[in-house]
Length: 92
Image (tube, rainbow, N blue to C red):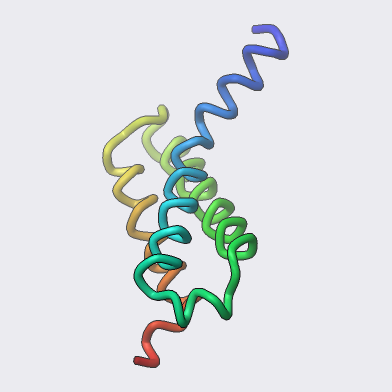
């Protein structure tokens, strides 16, 4: 596989983690503006992306290939939990 194809595969592997992170942060900016203002945009996107990429890598290791529905479900649940803690939503 040439380097360009390797980069393409890596970007396609990480795209769901970035998309979920972006949707979570934009959604929190729309629906919970007061709390989301204090956290900003870049930090939650970066944290949720790293956590999501870790979940995708874990799914690849556990299941032996990527694209399993359990991995994507875990990505959504873990990223949403991370956003919950970033916004400190348990405080009310």
